[in-house]
Image (cartoon, rainbow over all chains, first blue to last red; front, side, top):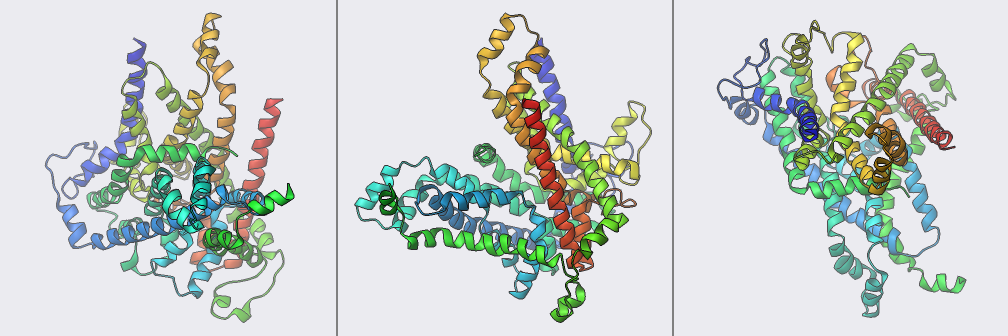
Length: 269
Length: 299
């Protein structure tokens, strides 16, 4: 009996949680104007794929999709290299003031990122990077959270492995490249996933630094489309579906790694 | 001892090679900008200084004073507090409720439910807010339709200043509860089962066990989640930006949205950075207060 009650409640919560997604998908497949009726229709009468075709042919969506992909993968690539080097150094290197330096980094995480927006914008403007992919990639190349994640994981690598490699005459960089990186694979997937999704979903920063519409990422393009096509419910829904599909697919395949990242991020020092 | 640490320490060139790049990026795009923002907040940096730096003047605390004298600032502060005070606890409670559901020994198909509850967290806010605008539509929206079954007359969710912030809060709770839910589930699983077994032997009801065991044992997790949630909620921006643009009549204008408008729309950079630091001070005070409350509760 209790099984039915608990699972029943869980079902209701799940339906309420999922409803916006369901409506997004079904409205995106309705013919123009069919979503704006009362009472609301939760399923299309006939499947109409014209909005998806429209988005790619008339609205240049493939271009925005590509921008989002290049920027996200670019940030993932650079941030994995820089953060893994930094995190490994904080975990295994011995040098003066290491603990103090790390504490400064950690405690500065309380400063809201918005504080830095204007100075970073002015800096990028002076470097001539505004309205280029680099305006998003460069500031994202390293993060305190990323260094923290790698460091937590690298602690678990036994010192003996590193010592043995040193005795064999490996340089610091060879140890990092040949031993540490392969051992860190799971946490690199986790960090890469967080970074990819964070960059793909980000809205405020691309909105600020990308001024030319051909450079827009999907969220910025979508928000821009919305102000022009506010009446085209079905078209906007199709745009939303395309925007969230990549993150959903990546998440479905790698959810185990994502959940592990949440757990590690919530571990207090 | 001193000799040993020296002998074992990593060569400085390796430290520089490994830490240099990431710390350089963090310095250039975080620490120095924070410092620059702090200095800028004492100047009248605006669109004229942007074209010619010689127009820049030091103005002392003027930006802070004019913020504190501006009714719009107080409105944005009030709205932000509304969002944090109402939305924060609601969000934490929803996460805890969902975690308790998932952790129940009576639940079936747990991985499916966990996945569905988590979906809003990973999706793009701009995309889902487009759907929510239609969920909130006064005429065709699903929410008003569902409410009509319990006899509630249509509400203009995003058009009525009394309902716009609740609408933003519902969206934010829906979007975020899955994240903290996962942390709560881990916290629940770390409570030893014997505690509950001992309590049931002594005849404690499920509710008593929840109050006497679950809540106290979860306290560190709850504190962590509350602080993270509060810090995040003080930075409210994208939800009102895409849903309402801060309207109607500034009823969803948050501090960050106000800051964005002043900084990037009107280029009142000095003023905007002052707003950023006011927000920082508020978040800092909020965090300290929560730590203090927790300490008092522990004693």
